[in-house]
Image (tube, rainbow, N blue to C red; front, top):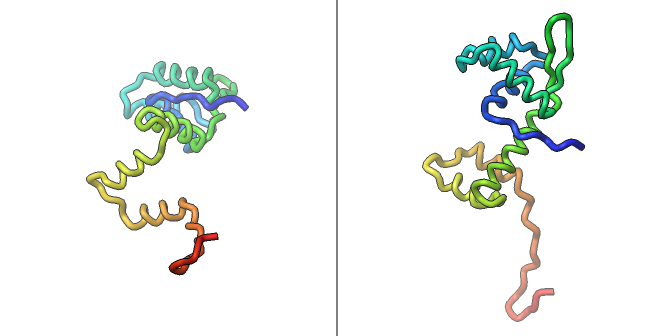
Amino acid sequence: MKPIPRISESEWKVMEVVWAGPPVTAQQVVSEVGEAEGWKPQTVKTLLARLVKKGALRAEAEANRYLYHPVVSRAEAVAVETDTFLDRISRGSLTPMLVHLAQSRRPLDEAEIEALRKLLPPKKETKKTRKGDTPS
């Protein structure tokens, strides 16, 4: 299996358009994100070419244009970005980041807390011991 490529911030904006409704043309990307970012059509085409070269997109020739399809899913790209972020800020450990988020100025709401609870495995039952008994 080919490794999932790292995607730059600008490339990520292009990928969001492709993930939202593949296949897409360069013109669709220009219309959806290029104009908002102030990118010229050639800039968008350069970003698309980079993404094809990295293996994140596949280009299919049709008449006088290319149709772009994602090779990498959004979930795969998010996983790579998350791992990179964790490695950079907390040496790959999730615990410091979770502690920071839980103690940040913006407290978790009930829905977020419940979502986290669902991710955690249930506690294992332990035998209760009476005074004087030794645990088995």
